[in-house]
Length: 274
Image (tube, rainbow, N blue to C red; front, top):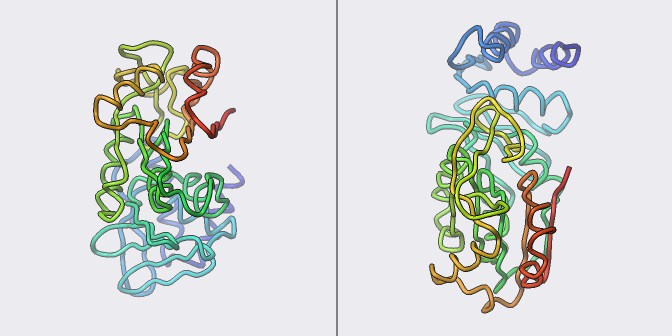
């Protein structure tokens, strides 16, 4: 609660109606209202999604925003890593390597992990690499690896996240041919599994937890997924380097324990665990 108050106070330097905007956001967050948060800066008025308002306020409070401009558009710079632009066409993240992502459904952590901390770095030139991105979320890592030359199989089970990933891929037509999106989970067996999520964008979505909402989704073992890819024309053996990136909140354990022989098909394993 103390942090929320301090974050709200810091927005005095950004928005003319900072107090009203902060109260509106809190009402929406606690289910006492719905809709958008109206903010006023300069002589302009903008209506932001609650997640986008929260992203701007928290990033500014934490010192990540290196410049802020408000006029015919809102533009925030985050060091040299990316810019957030809000205008009449919507809200966008534009990275230093010109990758574009929609920012109306946003995850505060994702952009910092990928473009400020560079946590997913595998190399500057990934030409003739295959990256199997298990837990592709809203497509940030798929676009990141594709921009470096890799062919990416982007596996994401949550329907809402998958839709956002498709929207983000469409914003980057020069990279679209390097990404194959698959709406499925990786699990201990083939079939269907339930995956739980909290909120519109939930980086902690998992088949091993309870959540506000549950989706029933297609599931493959890693071995079956590779066979499915071959049927779709993607033979992983033809690539110079094969990398497996797993961030699926539990399925990593299933793969390591149950499919050690399948893991040997990959040259690089990148696992996020908690």
